[in-house]
Image (cartoon, rainbow, N blue to C red; front, side):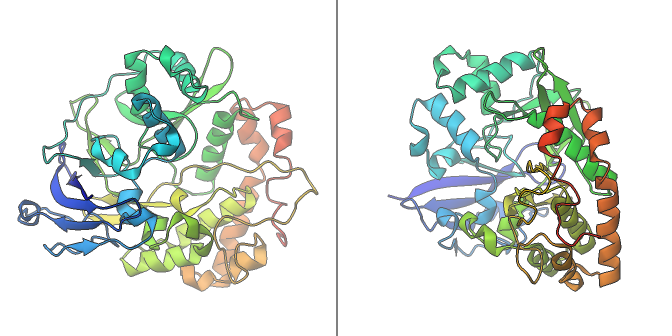
Length: 414
């Protein structure tokens, strides 16, 4: 049985999305089919939903491939991962493993990443102004209750607030929160955490910014019990002047979509391939991407998968998004010194070595000397990692967990 999903697109400087097309989806695994509707094609400001898939503005029906369970990559990018599916299942009283993509596309969600929304009707989804969060501690407790299967304790307002973060990717509990008129993604602690994730991610974001990497504006909120909540401003949202809680939306695609791959094919992706593919659609981000690759190597961020690299639409043009989800992997000096990143680095594949990092420098638009200078500058700043962690209140015990994670963990580093 085919399902019909209406696809909406928020265009630049427009608060409300407009109907862009119709998606027909068959049995799980698809593949689905999409066509732009005439009313959208007749708009003078119409833009393609993606620069790589669904990039041609015409009335031809396009069929998705067999990747991403028969979804177009740009659609999969705006659907949730583990946490969002868990919240959806909790809210609907069903087992998490029974949540399907089509279920997640039937309900409009104006807080999805990027500028796309879905509905099972052709009515424009209503956009509500967000309230300011008053009690962060209670929201953290509510998130833990979902993890613990204690959904019955949640108040309706708590369910609604947690649903506000359900469309975002990743496995950590989170919610979208309004703070001083800006939209933030709040990542909550969990009782199973081995260290204070929020403080570590805050330190890493600051450390990345110090080496010249663009990062979102971030804040750290301390809870009464001493744990932290990490707040990262949504770089795909722009506040509407004089309308608190209302936002313009920016388009988003992941590097996974840029490369036309499925999540199971993540190891086939690479930083040089991202640079090549971006250049083909007019995005010259090679040097910036190389800097991020070097940073992920010297901080041992092995969670650098293709969905953790993205591109946003600024007006009508696309560019590399600010860096996000930066987290080092704990390591002890001398133990597991050699390691791989999640995606390819150079001619030696995913091996995190200095030699490998320089081996494909030309694909980033750099000669070897330029690439080496960037890498060494990144390493020099990252050597100050203890200063950044101390600044954000990370304990000596937690710092020791990462004592083998920085700089010297990259084989062949000078």
